[in-house]
Image (cartoon, rainbow, N blue to C red; front, side):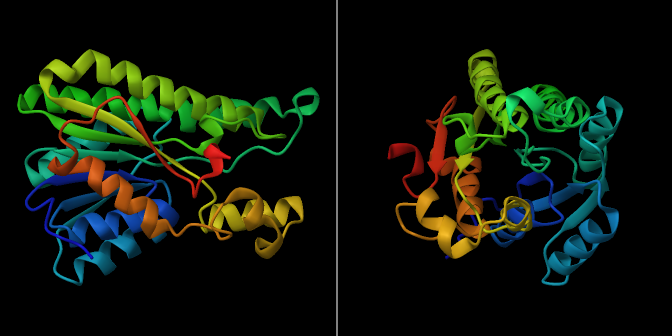
Length: 256
């Protein structure tokens, strides 16, 4: 069930062309937000934005590689130019986890993953927070981390390091800007049934049926829409006393 908890709010969602980002953009639009969908995949991103707009919502697609500072700055500027302001951001864009043990990790992929998952999230916060400060009336930022930001996974040294970093950066931003009523929180998804997860399962030779019970006390993978609901709550005024914290949307994985 969706309520208009973001009515007339302006939201940025990165990595919005598929998976959790797409689900979040769709849910935010259903909750009344004007949504800027950001992705480097222009074809898929525009298709999602157009499909959401066909239901009557206000959307805008922005092509951007979040590892590039100028493109991130332009992303925020384009959103404000189109909708007049910024209220909410969900920094979701990320690359597929790496797949080598520490003694064999791919340094080129390390650099690329860190530039998107870690630096890219930091750049998004940098320019989003600048806009929120300029407006002077606060806002809410949600960074998408992972259970890998709390429990180590084998063969994922770069991804684990980056997602730990996202949790730390979230706390730093919350401490620095709480007095300006800018709330910064994170969501740590567990195993969510997305194209990224399906690709990783295939890469490592696992099936969903055999692997889900290892990652979930509920014996199933999560749905992208379930993570979007967590982001919606953090983005809305319903969570107005939360900042600097993480919602573990992981079916109990980190509790086991």
